[in-house]
Structure formats: structure tokens, C-alpha cells
Length: 226
Image (cartoon, rainbow, N blue to C red; front, side, top):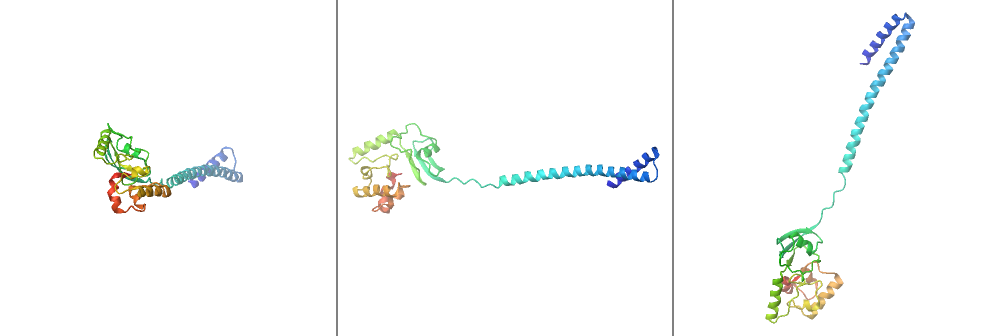
């Protein structure tokens, strides 16, 4: 392309020289000047095009680089979850997967909320739910029947701080003693342990208390909660 442009410039220069009567060395000098100007103009045009290509490529490279950096950020940490069995007076009883550290109220919400007739007066909705635990929401009739049965057979009334169950975290010594095999000394040991080592995370934690082995725990497992 450059050679064609150069030849074209020389031809045009010679024609102009003949028209104005310029000949000999003057023609040669004029031709060289015109050719130089033509080449300079051609270089600017070609250089500008090349420059435009480089800038466009540079823009593409920057865009790709930014995209890579934004996509290589640290992944969000996966939320830990637990499984809990919710039954009783809830809309949809069943086993649910909820976030670790969730409360009894969260478990009830996962089960569709309370159903008609639910009585939460004896349920601690603020308790933290442990993995693998069960949340039971009683009805008013259920609590009344339980109270009537206890008074009818002369037995002690069982605390219902956990939905018909004894919540071993806030339970008093008297409430703990309503459990089979738990006397005053064992109840005192339970209270002392939770005050020294923190609240129980699950019913099974009760076996960390001195005097409560697997056999005694098996007798009261269905009557306690956290």
C-alpha cells in the first residue's frame, strides 16, 4: 500500500511540474518534497489506525482483568444447620432443618406456626434448640388432662417448662425431683453442674453430672428437654 501511494505521489508531482513549467533538478526536489509530505500524511493515517486498534485491545484486556478479580473473591461461608423434630399443636409436624443456634420459636415457625388450641404457657420459646432434639407444643386440653391425671393418682405434678417436659436448664430443685430416680442430692448436683459448666446443650449432657449414668438417664430421657 505504501509503494502504491508513493508512486501516485510522484506522478502527481511530475504533472504539476509540467503544468507550471518546472523542470530538471527543481522537478526532482519538488517531487521529493511532495513525496515526503505524502508519506508523512500516510504515516499519520496508518499510525492513527494502529493506535486506535491498540487502545481497543487495551480496553478489552482491562475489562477481562476486572472480571477475573471480581470472580475470584472468597466464597461466603456455608451456614451451619441442625435437625429438629417438631410435633404437637403446630400446623405441619415433622423433622426440620434449621440454622444452628436457632430457638424453639424458630423451630415452631419452620413447622408452619402454632395450630388452633396450642398452649405455650409452659413452653420456653426462647430456648436454644439442640441438634437431634424434639420440640413438643401441647394443647390446652393436653395440659389439663395431664394435670388431672397427676392429681388423680396421687403422684407429684411434673413440671411442663418444656412443653409437657422438665426443662433441665431452668428447672428448680423441686421440679427436678419429680423425675424418676432424682432425689434432693441429685437435683442439687444438676444445678451445681449447670452453674459451673454452663447450661446443658442437649438432654444427653445430663449424664455429665455425677450420679447420673446411662441407666438412670434412660428412665428420664422421655421426660426432659433443654
